[in-house]
Image 1 (cartoon, rainbow, N blue to C red):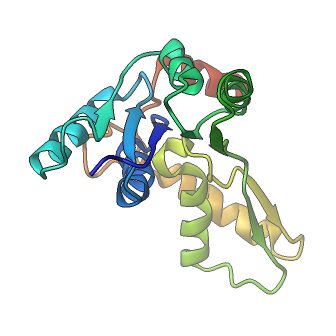
Image 2 (image 1 turned 180 degrees about the vertical axis):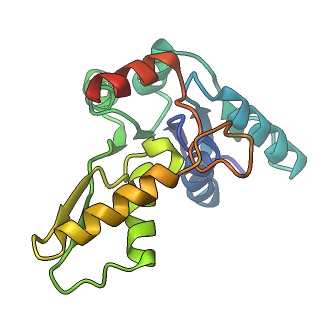
Length: 202
């Protein structure tokens, strides 16, 4: 059966397998062909996923991976035979995909461009170990390299001192180390550029 459409999927480096699976599964289930463009920092996950789809019996040409840099994403955004693009990444690049659509075939563009989610603790909160664990890990899980990280923690003044003391103790206890070591709680930054960006914030 011929696919009913072609969907371009552009996924970020911080969750390369999850994002690809979350985007590809519904597109494939709807009868579309998929062109997956992974971030240049994490292409091997997408290539392995393509191997697995072939092994699972998905016909050639239905699940495709194209690696590359920004010009590859632009080609996906502008190609007249691609009917829709689902993009997760920066606001700057998301705006480019809107422009590519407007300058080509007016394809549908789905954008998820991150944010800075708040972690809110009200005055009646029990400042217990579970709350502190969640507060710390919501900010530092995956090295803080995710769009849903709780980078703003808004704490009622009544519980602020207790919260601050406990969350600082928790963050000081996090084991920073090799991301391949199962005992590490925080691994490395994805790249030297990203490290420098984060260092700049500090």
